[in-house]
Length: 360
Image 1 (cartoon, one colour):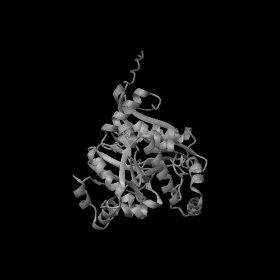
Image 2 (image 1 turned 135 degrees about the horizontal axis):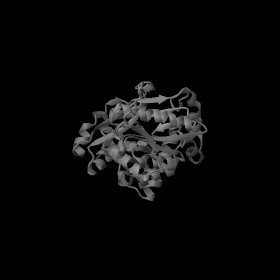
Image 3 (image 1 turned 60 degrees about the vertical axis):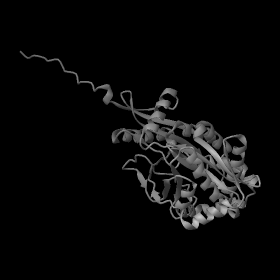
Image 4 (image 1 turned 45 degrees about the vertical axis):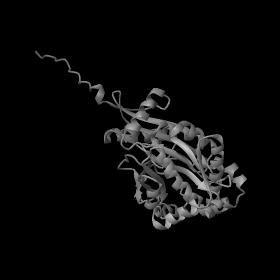
């Protein structure tokens, strides 16, 4: 007589081994956990913090997301994403919008890959043809770019005298000339500093043929970052002629949005601005100066090398068959850039924010 045997159920996996990914952008408690994770992670940047993504989305009317990977309830990875919509430049999920760094932070490759897969799925649901990762862990099967951008970082010297000596001879002479031109430097975050910074920045990018970002973007970043962001402005006869908005993170100062007027060139105000920022950052306790990214072969990259900064390749990756192309060095943009330079500045300042908020 045959016997029947009860089926032995498959043992359930311990909760701590089950990996899940959730979009937690609307959960304040989980957002705070993700911020703590970013601050403690070796590769964390200010662009991984919710302050950045929420600020740029509020300032440019885009949509924030925050993917978090968990094993059980243990947070093991994060990926902040900006859903960028633009009638001119298309749609994309960027990690993160308007940032030069960011991307996936995770405890291990399994968690990182799960975040990448979740981003691709989110892009499909959001009708975004591509996902852009700017640094961090990069999936092996995405299109990777290690040659377009370079970054520039070096230590801040112990005092002003040694800072001058750290600058190569020719550039040091430019800084000394700037120091003798009777300019003054102010720092702050108040309404006057914000207005002066935006006016100078608008003039600077107009001269380069690119649209200015909305003033509310800068205001949102300053408000969200609090004491971890400020403005330094160089003035001549009381007029602002060079100004930069900087971020401070883990002992590093990052001059992020800066520029100068036409007058600034003759006065060498930009040289004074960056030298003064090194001293200002040192007084705040910073030990490193991050000059930001530049495209390989550009004048901006050469300028930073002249200051004694060695370029380091930055690695980005894109998923999708139709990635955005918003490189101003692309020949197809040259005629538009030339035309933009000819627009009266008030007209450019009126139209520019509508265009730039979709660059992401």
